[in-house]
Image (cartoon, rainbow, N blue to C red; front, side, top):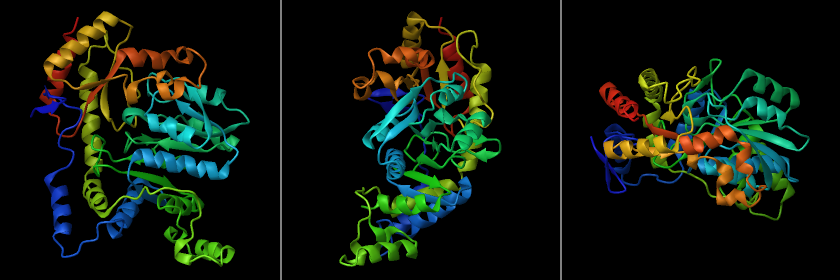
Length: 399
């Protein structure tokens, strides 16, 4: 199968066949009703409940994107710390992790990358904690488990919330527990290229009842009626007797709701998510075992991985080799992203560079290496063994 990307034929795209005929048939069956509900309704509610069971948490709130999930999470943190403060964040992550921190009035404190998990260096996280630290916002990058027991224990001791971005790591495991069920709040994305897709979509998950009720309201304009706790309704009505109970707005909020089509797709795809994770993991091991370890890094933290993409990171800086490598991948129809997650080193990006010290990016050498000498290549369930072999042979042949 060949896909076109920007007019170029791609033999090996970043994603292939992530929405199947059975998913579309479930949507069509719903649409064939005389008057189907399309806005946020019972399928959304059921998807939230089934997702919570799969993840191992009490509460989940379905939203329109993983980026919206990030914003809602930071909005919850802002309710608790209206004065602001610091949030420890990765330098290698998607932009919305950082922009959501900024948009809610917090100061991002950047940490370099662990070369084995691609997440934040956990020891550096602990060294950056101050009296102003309000949370640690850790991204599980590319399907790897980004946590250590030491970090979890120390954060609990210091009473600092752990927020997990699991947008590209559905099903990753730490000590027998799914990532996203470990921290105070977690965020997921269901964009097309991820482990499962609702076209666009995301989920915010927590075991905290108060957070759950606030998320439900924040997702939908701040409307109190969106809370499913009668005690919350009564408290707001008592404090605001001059307002219509159906139109009390608790917070300056958003419209981040998803819809019934997203809920139907989510329920259909969730049924095979475990098998998707298993296949992606098998693919990763085959890729790593065949990749030339004299040229590329292969010493990744594979335990608990639910792989999102094949990481291709040069062992040593070599600009000429990178140029030949990209030319070979282009010629061979291998789609890739340079810099790995989200455009590489976030401290180089225009939106953040102006508020950081000059040349701040130089303080993060591991992320800098990945920025210039790191790539990722698509991994997906219907990628065949012989296709992985062909990709590896192509990469290994570059001199």
